[in-house]
Amino acid sequence: MTLNTLSFSLIFCSLLSASSIIAKVQHHNFVIQETPVKRLCKTRNAITVNGMFPGPTLEVNDGDTLEVKVHNRARYNITIHWHGVRQMRTGWADGPEFVTQCPIRPRKSYTYRFTIQGQEGTLWWHAHSSWLRATVYGALIIHPAPGSSFPFPKPDRQTALVLGEWWNANPVNVINQATRTGAAPNVSDAYTINGQPGDLYNCSTKGTVVVPVNSGETSLLRVINAALNQPLFFTVANHKLTVVGADASYLKPFTTKVLMLGPGQTTDVLLTANQPPKRYYIASRAYQSAQNAPFDNTTTTAILQYTKTTTTSPPIMPPLPAFNHTKTVTSFSRKFKSLRNVVVPKTIDENLFFTIGLGLDKCPKNFPKNRCQGLNGTRFTASMNNVSFVLPSNFSLLQAHSNGIPNVFTTDFPAKPPVKFDYTGKNISRGLFQPVKGTKLYKLKYGSRVQIVLQDTNIVTSENHPIHLHGYDFYIVAEGFGNFNPKKDNSKFNLVDPPLRNTVAVPVNGWAVIRFVADNPGVWLMHCHLDVHIKWGLSMAFLVENGVGELETLEAAPHDLPVC
Image 1 (cartoon, helix red, strand yellow):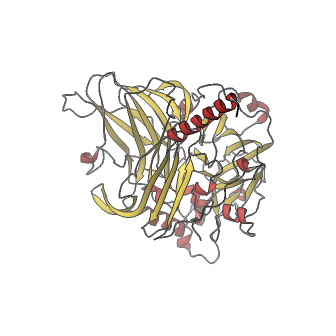
Image 2 (cartoon, rainbow, N blue to C red):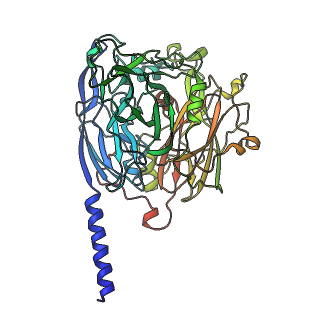
C-alpha cells in the first residue's frame, strides 16, 4: 500500500467514523390509547399518544434516523403520517391509510423507519385515519446538523406552538354521522394552542399556555396549524413577527403582524421581546373563505409573559383580521421567497391542470331522505378533475403497485379536467356538480419535471384549499385569482427564488402553480388538508416509477408492514 493510498484510507475511515457519530438513530415508542381529557368544563376519552395531548414533540438533527414503534391499544385502526418528511425511497413509512400501508389494527404494532435528509425547520406528525388527527398530533423539530447553524442569529429560546381544534363530541362520531347523513359535519367547539383553548372559553383559564420571555431576548416561535378543517390567523399583541421559514425550508426574512396558516402548514418566526414587561395575548382565529358555510367563530389564546413583569392586569389583546379578510392572506403569501436563488425546473415534461372543489351527489334511490341532507336533498362530495377519490380497503396502493396486485387501482387519472368551463364563475352548470368516483392514479416517470396548475372552482362554493403533496416539496411559482390563463399568467412565474413548501394554500376563487422533479419512487397522495374534504374525495395519488439502480428504487417493504 502506498503512502497516498494509506492516507486516503485513513481520511475516508475518519470521515465515516465522524458521520456515524454525528448522525444518530432515535428510537421512540408511541402508545395509542384512550385518555380522559377535560376541556370546556367537560371530560371525554380522547385518543392520544402516550397519554399526552398534544402528543410528544420529537427533536432531531438533519441526517438523523427515526424509528418509531406504534403500539395500537385503542379501539380504532390508526396510521401515523410524518407530515413534510421527504421519505426518500421509504414510502412504506409515509403513513396515509390504504395508500402506503394498511392500518395498524387494535392490539397490533408497526415501526416507522426513515431518515431526515436535507431538511431543517418545523414539521409535524399526525394520525392519517378517519378524524383521529383531531387529538393525535405533535411537533417534529429538525435542527441543523452538528457543525451547521441557522441562517440567522441563534435565538435565545425556541417554542413550538401547535394550533388545533377541539370537539366536545368524539370526532370519529362527528365524521361518521356526517357520512351517514350526507351533510357537512358539525364544527368544532374551540380552537387550541398546545392543546389548551385559553382564557376566552369556559373553564379554560387555569390551563392557558404561558410562553415566558426575558426583555431583550429573541425567541424562535415554531407555529404549526394542526387544525382539522380550518385555516387560521395568528398574531401576538404589540409584537412584530419576522418570518424566517415555512414547512422546513428557509425564507428571505420579512416582518408581519399576522400569519395565516392552512391546515398542515408550519411557519417559523422570530419575536424580539422589546415591549414593556407585561403580559400579551398570543391569539388565533379562523380564516373562513367559503361563503355561507358554518364555522367555529371563536378565538384561542396563549400568553406571552415577560419574566420580570409585576402587573396583575389582564393580558393585552391584539386585533385580528376579519374572518373573511382574504386581502390579508394574499398580502402575506406574496411575501414568501426562498432564502437563496434556487434551481426550478424550467423545461416541463408533465404539464398538468387539476381543478379542485366540492360537488353534490344525487341521492341514491335506495337511500331514505335522512341520508341525503346536503344541499337540496343531495350528499356532499368533492373531487379533483371531476374524480372523487375512493381509497381501497383490501390492499394499500403501494402494496398493490409493488406486488403487481390487479384491480386495486387504475392509472388513468386525467391530466386536465374532462370539461373546460368558467371555473370560478357564478353560474356553473348543475351538470358539473356530480363527479365520478374512482381509485385513479397518475403515473410519472422517475426524474420527470412536473408542473401542476391547481385551480379552485365555484362548484357549490369556492374556498381556500390547503393542498398537500406527500413525499415531496415543491416550488410555488405563482398564485392568482380567477381562472388561470397561461397566455397572461405565465409571465407572473417566479423561477428565481420561489418558496419551497409541502402544502400550498390555493387562493379562494383562484389558482396556484407548483413545480417539482419526480425523484422519489412510490405512491404519493395529494389531497386537500381540510379533513372533511379528504373524506368527500378531494384527493388523488401519483405513482412515481423506479429509476435506474438502487438509489432510484423504492426500498423493499418492511417485515412488520400491517396486513389488511
